[in-house]
Amino acid sequence: MRLEKVGQIELVYTETDDEIPFAEGGLVYGILTGKVDARGLQGTLHATNLARQRPDEAFTPTLRGVVTTTTGAKAYFTMDGISVRDPAAQPPRRIVTVGLTFWSPNPVLKAWNDIYAVAELVGRAVGDSWGVAGPLYRCVTEI
Image 1 (tube, rainbow, N blue to C red):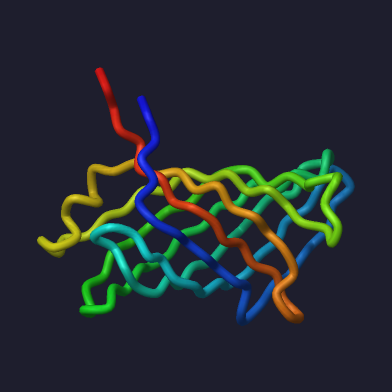
Image 2: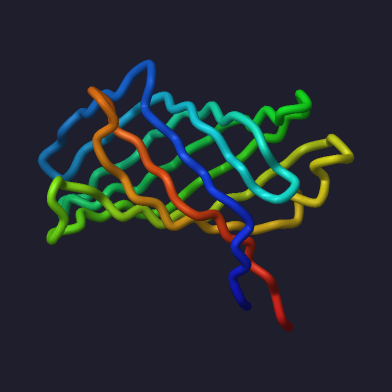
């Protein structure tokens, strides 16, 4: 398998960003909005995230949401992965690696139904909130 860069993705927490600590970790719930600019998929993103915080301070983002393209077509997406603190970064940031899947009945977006994508994101403060941005890659099977 190889990775083929297809675009960029960015998301920012908007309506809520609630962190509930537990002795063995915690949970973070939030609503995010953003955009994707990829070959054959350009538009806005709206998602919810229920991320588990592990005792080692890594988070496991679990996003579910909708892409609305610039033409009004819609696709559902999932985004799951891991978010770890970058200990050398000043100001503080996180490195977020996620896998994405898409589903749409729209013929224009149907090609994305068979794509497994990964994103390599940098998370950092965005105003009073927090967001992620970075490249989006399509996994290309070579079997």
